[in-house]
Amino acid sequence: MATTRRAILGAALASAVVSAAGPLLAQQRMQTYLPPGVKPKPKGPLIFLDYDQEEIDYAYDQAPWAPNRDEIEKRNEQKSAAAIARLGPPKRVAYGPAEVEKLDLYATRQPNAPINMFVHGGAWRRGNSRRAAYMSEAYVEAGAHFISVDFNNVGEVGSSLLVMADQVRRAVAWVRRNAASFGGDAERIYISGASSGGHLAACALTTDWQREFGLPADTLKGGLCCNGMYELRPVSLSARASYVKFTPETIEQLSPLRHLDKLVTPVVVAHGTLETPEFQRQNRDFADAVKRAGKPVTYIVGRGYNHFEIQETLASPYGLLGRAVLELMKLV
Image 1 (cartoon, one colour):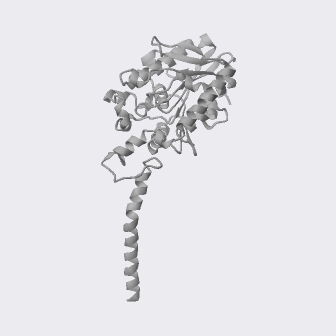
Image 2 (image 1 turned 90 degrees about the horizontal axis):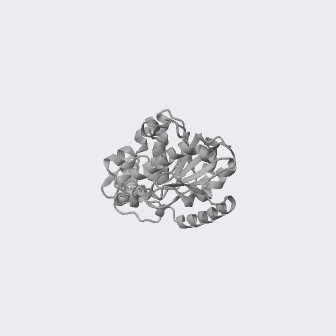
Image 3 (image 1 turned 120 degrees about the vertical axis):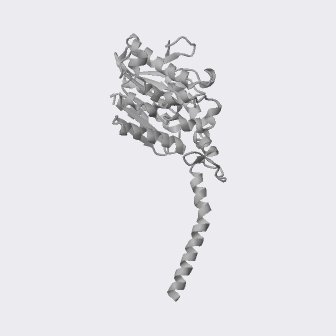
């Protein structure tokens, strides 16, 4: 009888603990989808996976997850000025007729050198080629040309990502056809990009170069996609839809995850552990899909890096991603 009573009391106590923990566990679960310091509130209707509307909006907004973004931009401006002081200003070369359709070329002295083309980020609506100057020196000193691509921001082209992706692709095509004019090797062109630039770089890597440009299928010999987006449907459900026209055509054509049959070169996929959970998922799923497709992929998780900090490592030959790109280009 005593044993039975203890069992009953124990069960009751366990039930009470579970009941008390329930709201706490639910709150902790919800908190994983919200930036630090944002107070959880009752979960709304699910929009995508286990995200409600507030959570999916936060999932595609990096600023609340990286409060040091402005400080990072300031120090990169300082590093860019120092790099230009040492290397000299880049040569500004047009790849298309629009005023913005130009490349910043930081040339190495090595003859017939490989080329790293960098695609800047900025949520598709900010940024320019000049802001990548601080990355240039690591590649120039390693014996590669560094090219930072300029293109329109989405607000300048009718909210269309299709225009931006086309500009990046035309920039690659121009470099392929004109590499010899600046001492570059047309057979060793690589691309790298971060954030929305990682998305555009992935679009370039999954381009049918033969059909669309009359160029070899392996026009690009490899690429690095840092904290990009590779399936646009969930992005279209977020607040980014307020300034991007996510038409069915855009989602289908510019979701690189859907076009891995066109990927013919090695790719490095990277993100930091302090990214939003959704950016981590996007990059993890893309790397997994590339691997399942039987294509060569290197997956890098930067411990303790947020969205903007991991991009900085592209500027150092000893940095997490700088070394990865140089290894991809066979320059280490």
